[in-house]
Amino acid sequence: MEWNKVKFIKITKKDFQTKGATGVEHQLFWEGTTPVDIYKPIVVFYDIDDVQIDSWAEINFKYYRGALKKETFHWTELPEI
Image 1 (cartoon, rainbow, N blue to C red):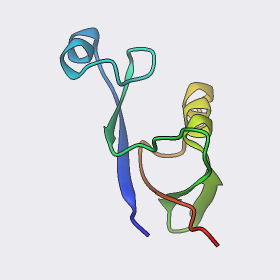
Image 2 (cartoon, one colour; image 1 turned 135 degrees about the vertical axis):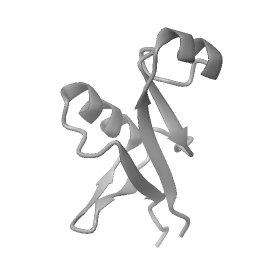
Image 3 (tube, rainbow, N blue to C red; image 1 turned 180 degrees about the horizontal axis):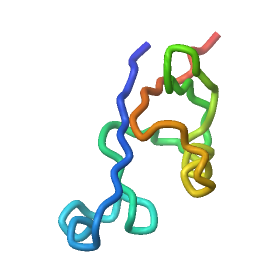
């Protein structure tokens, strides 16, 4: 199981032009590895007592609703059984 660290960074329009169109609404840039399939369930580790099964799409919705708990977290794919 490989864990990936991701950090959400708000960026300026100038930074957006430099880093490319990989952010959300030109205000957010993902630093780190993100899932290829944004709708596939993943395990998200926010904190030692906060581990959730989510999708990347849901994480983005949480950001827009102001419900994203941390700007830096780890994620991994669900293991196949």
